Figure: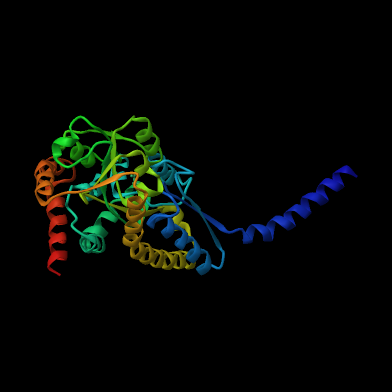
Length: 334
Ligand code: LMR
C-alpha cells in the first residue's frame, strides 16, 4: 500500500513538473555596482521592462543594483562562469580579465565631449573593441554612457602640485594608475562599493567619478572640495555571457536585442541630464565646495598629464591611441 502511495505521488509530481517546467521563464540576472538612480541603473530597469514585454514574460530579468550581487572584479568573473548573465562594467574594468585595450578610454582629456564618445563607440573602432571580448566568453552588446569625471579631495585641487602625496581611489585600470602617478598622487585600486567608507575614514584622501556616481553614493558629503575638471570619461560596455546568449532560442535573442537597442538609446539620452541634476543637487547641498579651473590651470593639468600618453602606448599600443584620436578629431569636424 505504502509503495502504491509513493508511486502515485511520483506520477502526480511528474504530471505537475512537466507543463510547469515548460513554462518556467529563462532567468537573466543583470548585476551592476551603481545606484538605481543613475544612467546605468535606469538603463538596466528599462532593459528589464522592455525585455520582459517583448518576450511576453518568457524571460525574467532580475536587476541587482548597488553591488548587491557582486563587486567590481567579482562580477566579471561571475559573468565568465555564467553565475550572472549580464553586466555593464566601465571601460576601465576590463584590464584584469585581459582586455586592456578598453583602457584607452581612460586617457586624460582624450574625449572632449559626448559627440566624440558617440563617434568612437558607434564607429569601426568601437565595434572592433567589442569583438575582443568574445575570446573571454562574453559578448559586448552595447555602449552605455555615464559622463565626465570630477576630481575630489579634502583639500582644494587646482594645480597639479596639489595632488602630491595624496591617496586616490581608482578603478582597476593601469592607465588611471599612470594618470594619478603623473600628478604625484598615490593611486589605490578599490571596489566602487567601498569608496564612500574609505573616504569617510581617511583610508584614501580623494577620488574621481561622475556627478551621478558621486551624488548617489554621498561621496560629496565626505569630500570638502570637488574640482570641475572633466579630465576623463566613464562609460560602459553592456556584456552578456556568450554561451547563455548563443544558447537562447533565436526569437528570444531577437526580442532581447531589440530591447537592448531601445534601452541603450534611452540610457544614452538621459545620461547628461542625470549628471547635471546630480551636480546641481551637490551644489545645493553645500557639503562640498566646487572649484572651477582657470584656463591656465587646465593647461597645467594637461601638460602634467601628457606623459601618460607615452606610458599608455606601452600598454594599449600607440596605433590604438592614434586611431582613437583620429576618430575624436572626426567628431570635432563633423
Ligand atoms: C567606478 O568604479 O567608479 C565606476 O566604474 C562605477 C560605475 O560602474 O559607474
